[in-house]
Image (cartoon, rainbow, N blue to C red; front, side, top):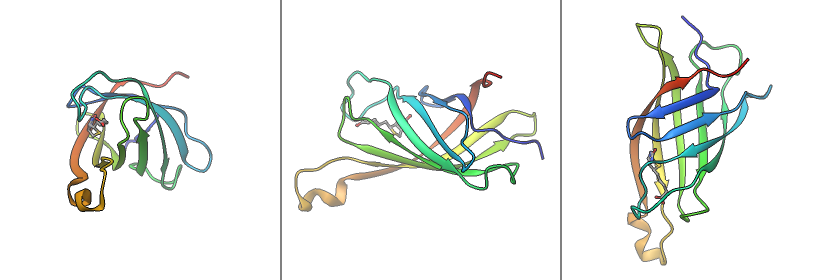
Length: 129
Ligand code: BTN
């Protein structure tokens, strides 16, 4: 199994971009997310993300989860969970599913506040160093 590394620049099938920093010893990481799509359909800003990879050095294809804060343009939150793979041609990809929680004004609207979906990320650039 070729090792799959989370750090670096990634792009998903919606053309969103994500840069993940080097991983800390405990598997924690930070990064930035630029989404090409929004609930309101308006303009977007670079948004911070924080997450953690499981078993940082022991596994070739680690699982991970991270959260994105869209706070500069939206009061929604997204949580992604996924796994890093190396495909048959040696290319790394991140297979993820996400929950997007929108803020609603009342408990009666709670039932429609969460969306679920899938994103596949492929590597756009390898990390420096
Ligand atoms: C919002 O519109 O309120 C926040 C932006 C949400 C973007 C979502 S998160 C899941 C999906 N994957 C992306 O790259 N963008 C959308």
